[in-house]
Figure 1: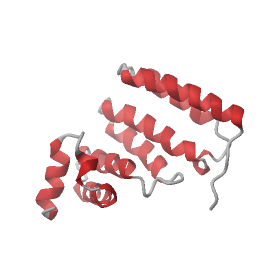
Figure 2: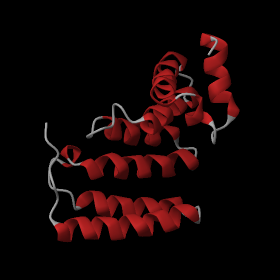
Figure 3: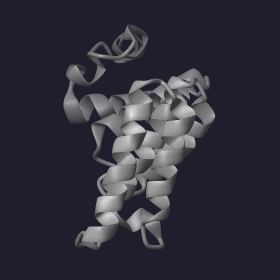
Figure 4: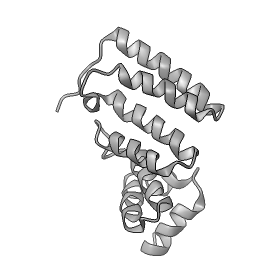
Length: 143
């Protein structure tokens, strides 16, 4: 399916709100960041899952929940990102899905997504993450 293009005005507003979200994320003001990302997401024409921007906006919201240790909400967001354009083959989306499942004690699903992330990007995808995720995979699959 060919990627659709947003109107320039809408895309500019989405970028502006996303930048504000990123600033709040960097300040660890995760609820405020989510608010900005959510506003940007609402600008996407329906269904929003057809737009490339949905992938990174859902990922950004999911990341806010992840760093707030709200793994269930993070999981929901990353599943939305996974089902948006490019989400299936996105190593970061797969990594966060695996990490959320790991934290929610769903080890079989965690293995699946962590392994996908590893297969897409190799060990480097784990380089800035807690060691426990790669160690878990390595112990299980001898990577």
